[in-house]
Image 1: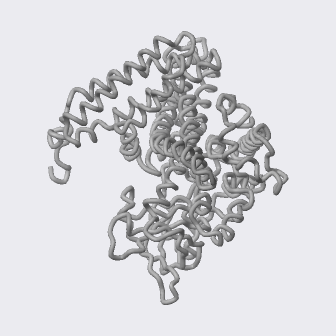
Image 2: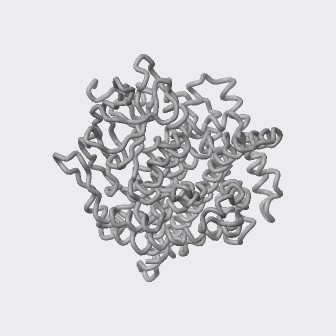
Length: 580
């Protein structure tokens, strides 16, 4: 198969168009590692070359090793070993992980002193997309490197030294052990108990469910350490290794991502270590972990969408009906055009979100290192800006790209017809794999709750204003004016809803408000991309024109004041069937 990096020039386009020099200097701490590690870059061009070489390696492994295994991984799945309480990966997953580990890619974002590559998050996100295009279920193991990042950020030095080199070498994988049978999205209601024994050592007792890669060797567990305190402030984060007191009770039979084990886990007085400080498990540590997880699922979604779009495009070009290939039938051609536009839009949003998260984290580090007071003040101001922006963009990327992924997989089957529905083609698997992306690491509805705060607080509008300060590309002045009109209407609509409507109406209309804000944001991204190529300019014009029409319709809906869902719910939905 082809190299999944070099055969996709859009990834290189985003690396080329971004000014990554400030990010590189922050990530490399002005190249302090160059003296200690012979593979550390000495300057910005050297670092950028390293990033491209890394993506090239990921692309090669994904095309040559992972993608050919994906069908058998899906067929075999993972196996619960009864009586042992352990899980065995599909043989293909094991081979793929070994290949990635041998290439030193399992500690991509970790510092070099632990054996990592010290990659910025945006490069890791693109690597995750590439791996996901080859096999989405593998991403749920490769993409859990955020667990190691969390240990690096919040754990003690002893804990870092004990665990991080093993992550970087590929010796261990990890799991975020958060969800419980009665606490799915409502993590404040976690009940798994953390108690201290007579020696002061922590012990974990209780059940966790829907744990991705719960069979991993290293577990980050959210548990209730304060028995007399309900809510998030009673929760702490714990680190434990797989042992005889942690048992996998079952693995879920899932619709897709069969190569990724999803486990129900029983903790029986299992020994554990506290990470950081008590009571900060949810409000600080897991929230930081979730930002990375959202970008990870956005990247996974992007990879699935890229794979589905390619399947449909290649099929349509080779399938002849009525004397011509079906990609020349207007209805099919329009589907393909919309799919390509959606996939490239998703990648632009993914890069934007990953960069914001990178800068938020790296500026915080730089602020802590700064000795000059004025420099700390300057860095603090920048960091706060990126923190607000990342708070908007990370859920926006997860929401928009995962929904896009499902649409593209759906439309790809429409292009391929009955063939797409058959297991003879990869699209049937891609369609099943796509569905989970809008659900785990926070459903689309929960992402909307997070995103709408950035709309109503003015965070999105501030970024729009920054975009608008740039002179529009040649030929785009009229579209830029239309975007300005939509921005004005959006701001007026938000003010009117906040002033004239009850709070539940804002909750009801959160999704169309969010959809408008993301459409405007991405339209500005397209205008920036239009400066760099004629092809991008054509795509930008198509996206922005249609976005303006969508936004106008949604804003009219919001302004209508239609409360029927709230006021006439019983009539619209009716009683439950048991009640009837």
